[in-house]
Image (cartoon, rainbow, N blue to C red):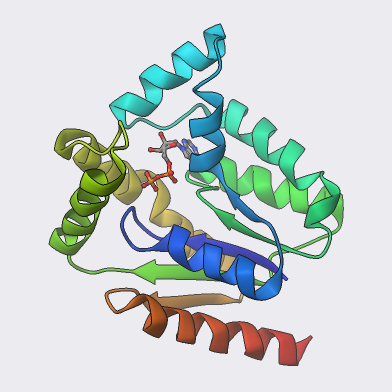
Length: 194
Ligand code: ADP
């Protein structure tokens, strides 16, 4: 099953993606985690990356597309994958379509995790900041990331609605278990159709 999870920072995307991974035994491809690993290297690219991440800006589309191209080419994705954090821009969404076409694959389902209240997102992100101490989790940088989500990434939901029938909106302002229950139900109905 090829799964894409969309949703703002703090919507619980990563948490749900990890549960899908555990349940279905498919790799969880989280670009944020990949970038946080890369930023620790001692190279000029890593230095540049640290600056971009610490500002809460988006990493260059070209670099992200290369990263995903390499990752999807790996054998462990053949039985499916859950993509989290990519695409984040229209250019990335178009590149992903092209990439999947080349690989002869397509997305089976796109989850859109919705949290209508910005305050709830902020609250969750600030709590995570306190727990994990991520460098890009300061209040200013969080604000910047949410803004970029609204302007660059939220429009992708409509893109997938028009290009791809199977977009499932999920109210994510509920408990992890309740949200996952709905995720599971949707995945079961996709499986039943296959
Ligand atoms: P969050 O969703 O909470 O912002 P992530 O761990 O998904 O956290 O991403 C952390 C940072 O990595 C983002 O703020 C952004 O700078 C960068 N990043 C991750 N994925 C992408 C992407 N597809 N395109 C551009 N930048 C990205």
